[in-house]
Amino acid sequence: MSKKRKWDDDYVRYWFTCTTEVDGTQRPQCVLCNSVFLNADLRPSKLSDHFNRQHGGVAGHDLSSLKHMPTASDQSETLKAFGVASHEDALLQASYQFAYLCAKEKNPHTVAEKLVKPCALEIAQIVLGPDAQKKLQQVPLSDDVIHSRIEEMSQDILEQVLEDIKASPLKVGIQLAETTDMDDCSQLMAFVRYIKEREILEEFLFCEPLQVTMKGTDVFNLFRDFFVQHEIALDVCGSVCTDGASSMLGGNSEFVACMKKELPHIVITHCLLNPHTLVTKTLPTKLREALFTVVRVINFIKGRAPNHRLFQAFFEEIGIEYSVLLFHTEMRWLSRGQILTHIFEMYEEVNQFLHHQSSNLVDDFENKEFKIHLAYLADLFKHLNELSASMQRTGMNTVSAREKLSTFVRKFPFWQKRIEKRNFTNFPFLEEIITSDNEGVCIAAEITLHLQQLSSSFHGYFSIGNLDEASKWVLDPFLFNLDFVDDGYLMKNDLAELRASGQILMEFETMKLEDFWCAQFTVFPNLAKTALEILVPFATTYLCELGFSSLLHFKTKSRSCFNMSEDIRVAISKKVPRFSDIIEQKLQQKSL
Image (cartoon, rainbow, N blue to C red; front, top):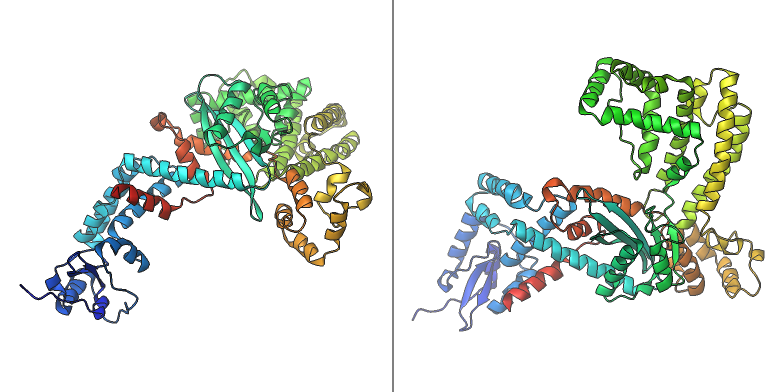
């Protein structure tokens, strides 16, 4: 019987460690390629030969951190301790990382096995050699594997969000909106805002189809079933912000009625990003007809492929910047303002094109009164676009949003006074084309009437949730006049104590309002709770609109049949999957 060779710690300089079998036989294993050799190869010449031949060994490597590996069962854990993943761990990690990137970039699952992996194998063969190609070949990247990986990561992200919701010290805010995808299937999307540690977080909650009808009760049942399925009480919701869908909106809608019945104290708010619709509903007859004329012109050009191609060729010929017009849509608020601006700036060129095509829209389009109305509408909707754009961001709360709306509405009286004096400074497009006093008098009367109606509509439509004087300490507890607070108010003493702290004043001046009140939870819990109950509710459905944009990438003609909720969660969630936990669980399942 041949003599068994013994491991020497000096062998680690060749990137080898030792595995010990049940009978005590020691065998060398390369930590770079996981190759395990015979006990007879446990000598410097053999190890050095492998290191130099297979891995381009370079003298001077200090590998003293490698330790003796006592048993084969400890191999994976020992390699992890060395900072080197085991072969199986590395394959799984590569597979999960690619699936994660695939979902983040909203790519089809088949892109891995049809494009990425073949390309990677060719590159490895050319640049790194056949050994590297063989290793890459073992990475599982089939369509089914990628789909499975994304599902597992999605579930892990959802678990993290649900854990945060359960741990939140206050009731959470919900953002809820509905859209119709390319298959005419109604999709309900929800985001959640909650408190974790010293900050307010916003996270994707779910995207689920409404199978048959889109009534308020259907929306409520789907919403409630999600919480029931995940064993979370519905009363964890403190507020819900909805879009303009009739099944959700309004004090008498079915959804609101169901929510109020289930949760009497819940706060229901309407998305503040829809002033364009309100403006359109308050337009006088002539202004509304002008808007509809613009829509008909756009549809004449864009709705017919030959006209659209001729329109682009015509603009290329005369060298004009705008050759592509936007469709008018009801649900994408900025499109209406953009098309009005584009049509006004391209008025002469569009007019020439309509003449060239002998369109019956020419008479309405050439009318001087129409052009004046178009200029006013382009100016007004440009102001509305700027207002909406200022509220299109994450972290927007109802207080900040209503301040922006209030500031916008306060401009109306000043605009009216200037318009009455024939001063059109606030409407530059209109000012540009008004050439006579008679034209100014006619349009001034219409604008004044419209601004008065618009001001009343804004106050009635967006008044819910405005802060009363006694609650404005939430915005600035240091400049707030305590005389507005009743002496019987339990937190008045806390407010006085908070105002006396110079350190807290410095925090207030350097932190965001929401973060400041989160930081006060340990010192002034009652004040912080009251303030955050005002700041946590969503003001808009902006996150849902972003989610619907992602939906367009997932629900296409070639991907119309698959369930996309898992992919969307991985793609737009701010949470990162816990890869190490997922892989460890996967390995344990395989070993059972």
